[in-house]
Image (cartoon, rainbow over all chains, first blue to last red; front, top):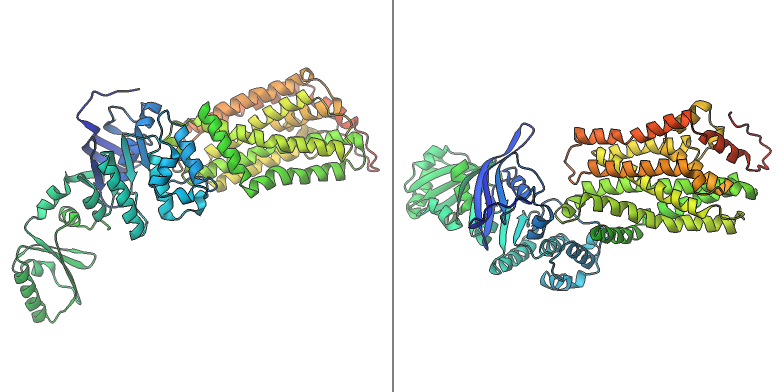
Length: 311
Length: 297
């Protein structure tokens, strides 16, 4: 077992690197997570989030850098480390014919310290499904079971890799509720997501990851301060216009094109809207949609990379 | 150890809920039993033990297919990686595969014996200790070989292809389906390099010749060495992750699993009497058939 010196952080990642052949998946990622906080790795698919988390879970070796979780090296600490962590993996399954309660009991039996399956069934709303086969569960129920299994050893640190990906909005809200509850219990959680709403709603701290690098990190509020004092106007036009022209409109601090939509940040919304309408009339163009909102982490990502998260 | 036993119990439960498992581990061997004892032994009771040996060998060797397919399925579906997060070791995972398969094979073996005795009027039970040892070592050997194949192939398609090749060799070159003495001399020499041959001839000797466990020492020793090495290699080449490529080291380990069979074949060719005992057991079987088959000398 390798034990690192105790630090204030429960997770420490310093200058982490990982390549798959010629592809550099992680290029010097560093961040720290304090005990009891929910830390989010936010980024598009292929940003290196899953590779980072799987290194922390001990499922992959890193090429370089230092990783410490609960003062332990995930690769070298064996069963002692496995007792300390719980995880919901992005791509995993259970045998089709295993029953829900059997799975909880069996996984619990692997650990020295474990929670009773009855309590987990109740907590995750799986009591009625206790005798159902895994193959008979819906997507949401499978994910609730995955969360229950991740807590079966009462871990200090929980890794949730895209826990709501592919789920419908209602189930996603159920999962948010469960994670919020874990947050209230002061469970340390490292969450990866490409959903802005998830990061904003659940995370105490967020690291925005793109192309294997952390491009910004802080609290959601701190990150959104980058766009402080501005309002977001997202619009679509019948015919395209040069974005430089829209950038020159009154009150506009920034204008970018993403997915065929123009995302404008304005410090004076009424003036910008009036100027926009006048400009479009002059050009013989029309609005096909217009949406005004407060800046989000999506805008931070757009500002930093010029791309949307879902690109 | 505790985790291996927990996994064993879980795997047995899963197997009993799987119709394909029930078919291939119980129904299919019974079809073989009735085919071999009903059709080939006909009403000749002294031929029953000889053909029962073939059926038992096929039942034991079935673990080769079953476990390799199950392991690849578990790996491809990401089931193994979920277990990897827990304190379950690769050894416990593999041992549970073999142990559950062994326990699930025993009822089939017993039913085959009972049917041979009560329906096909087999005289006596043969040497039960010898049979128990051969069935045990045979299961570990063939299950481990299946697990090696599962770990050195990347997809189910590759696994099935390799399985098909090896299975055909085990089936047709070992004496399990076609009696060894009937095969051309060069094939009999090739058979000496297959673990299946030692299982088949060992079972023939304890069932037909009713020899003691000591007298099948070479077969037991051969299968013991093969079982130990195959299990060790299966642990070395084991992969949890579906996308993890087969490493060069794993390939070397897999290749090393062939060494005991090579050494065994060379020794048996030079010093052993496996071919002659197989011929004796075959000839001792009274055959009422009008078709005369002359064994190859």
